[in-house]
Length: 250
Length: 108
Image (cartoon, rainbow over all chains, first blue to last red; front, side, top):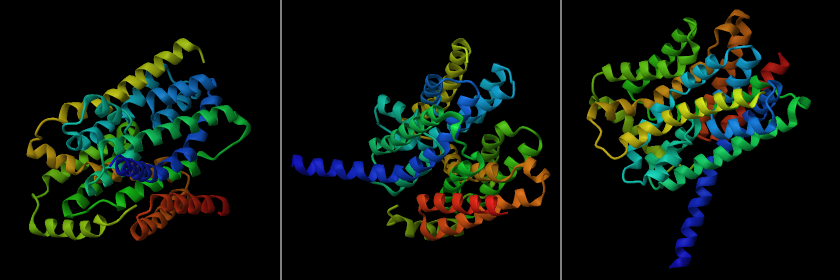
C-alpha cells in the first residue's frame, strides 16, 4: 500500500517535471541575457539574485536594468514594472476555481509563482483533469528555480559573453504561440482573441505600450462578453476541438 | 548600485507583483463565481496569449526600420504555428521558433 502510494507520488513528480521542462528550457535561454543586462546596469551578482527571487518577472527583469541604463527615475521604473504585471490578476482569477478548498498556504505559494508560461501549461493540465494543486505548484517552482538560477548565472558571466536578446526572447514568443494554438476555440473566443490583438496594436501605436498586454486582453474579454451567448454552433465546435486534446499527453 | 536604491525598487516591484498574483486567487477561490464573471474568465487564456503574441510580434519601431525587420518575426511565428498545430509540443515550438528566427536574422 505504502509502496503503491510512493509509486504514484513518483509518477506525479515525473509528470510535473515533464510539464515544466519546456518552460525551464525557455527560462534558461531568456534568463542568461537578463542577468548579463543587470550586470551591465551596475547591479552586483547578489542584487541580481535578490531582485529575480523577489519579483520573479521576466518583463520586469529586463525593464529594471534597461530603464536604469536609460536614466529613468526610480519611480518610473517601479510604475512601469507594476503596470506591465497587471495582467497577473487575470491569471490568478482564472485559476481560482481550481483552488477551491485548497489551503491558504499552498494557494498563496502557487499564486505567488504563476507566470504567463506556467499559467498556460497548468491550465491545460487542470482542464484535462488528474492534475493536483501540488503538481501545479510544482510546475511553478521548477520554473521559478530555473529562472532564478539562469538570471544569476547571467550576472556571474557578466559581459564576457553576449547573447542576442531578440533571438532569446523569441523562445517566449514561441511558447505563447504554442499555448494560443492549443486553446479550444469557438466563434466568440476567436473574435475575442482578435480584439485582444487589435487592442495591443492600438495601445502600442498610442504610445502606451506598458499597459498593452493587460489593456488588450481586457478589451478582448469585453468584446467576447458582448458576443451572443453560446449558440449551438459554438458549443459544437468547442466540443469537436476539445475531444482530441483529452487523450493528448504532452 | 546603491543598496538603498536597490531595496526600494526590489520591494515595490516585488510587492505589487505579489499582490497582483495572489489577491484575486485568494479572494475568488472559495466562493461561487457569478455566471458573468465565470464567462469572462473563460476568455482569459485566449485573450492573454493573443495579447502576448501580438505584443511580441508587433513593434512600431521595427516597422519604422523597414518591411523586412517587421515581417521576419511573422515568418518565424508562422513556422511555430505549423509545429504547434501539428505536434502541440512546447519544446519543439521553442526549438523551431528560435531556430528559424536566428536563421532569418543571421542569414539575411
